[in-house]
Image (tube, rainbow, N blue to C red):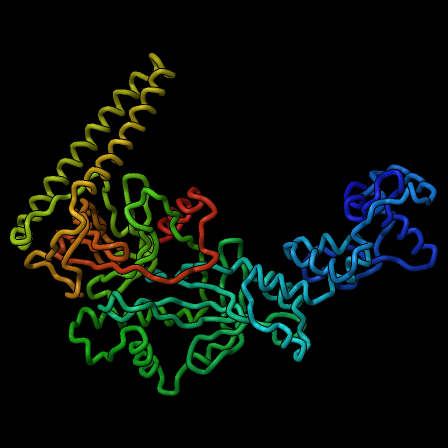
Length: 540
């Protein structure tokens, strides 16, 4: 009764207007429609409803009170039903689309008003950013309500960022509303070694309304235009795609022509231009492995890392150089006194999902002057000294933890409080060390790579802000014998950083991906950490 009273504007003394209207309809042989449960049905017709059951649910089984006698003093306040229809259209259009089906259950008047396309045009624009002139849809017989219910609302769970399950290679898929389409764009790094160039992207699938009945899924893979495909939403954070016409992926020149076309798109060159035999083997291996999927893939959701005012720079996605493997996509995130670089795309040595670099923000490095910096042995000496210091601190922490565990039985509560206080103090000390290091460091200092360190991109910045001790993950082919080795994290500016791999005598340069991704924010820090854990476990 409370629901009807709020919507109809009457109180218990006058009874439920909806209930009385339903009784009058039954006397006249007419029945109201069954309430809808989905936006697709809001504003549409339905089967005959069960009014007695609905009345009992609303009234709680109590007999309806008799209406009071009409009169000037007893007149009820204005209700929504007495408002002009055009005003109700404005009110209903301001509500979330997912609430409109419940509104359609109230009465036939509300249901009739919810058939107005203006309401759904506004919901398409405000909730999904559809800015096209939706009035043109009338030519095809598709209403804005059809677009909302059968396209946007139905496939809302696949909007955002995803990582395909392609063995060690991974990838970055961005599913967006693009006009009257939902399109899955695969983002590709620029051609090696041009790390500062913008990202490339190509469509893998699209969804749109061909007719009023249902949405159509089309595979965009290959060079013969869109063809029949299928999407299955496995669960909230996972979906799969399937191409039903894989013959559209084949080329008349056979696998050789397909490989050469793929090589031009992936690397921007021909096989004859690549002289290094090992690089040729890696390229051929990737083509054979990835082409076997034929765009039949499973995708898992990924989130952009949450940011904090205390972060060294804004976290996000970066593209970085990885030797003969080319450019790869890495996600930089901050976790207290640590920063982590997680691979979104990978290679046979370090697969996607693994933590490629870890930066110890509690241990800044003071680089030598520019002349001594050219000496690799001098830089190596500084880094190894810090590595030994970190090892001693970890051992001392382990010993302290063991001693505190042994004394827990004597005074559990005081010990727990002391432990919490010391832990907080340690974090403050680490944060203070980082802040002090940044305060002492100049705004910029000269930087040059030591002699003997290999860089795919010689056009790296010649000044840097600050450096930190870090570790990088290296492994053999097939992720065999993985180990973390010492290195140097070099922050150049807000959008670029580098990492010197001491053991490999190699340098990786990273540049921020400057794309505004929608529907990619993590609902919480815990959800982001869980996502990182999941993609790393899958890679392992």
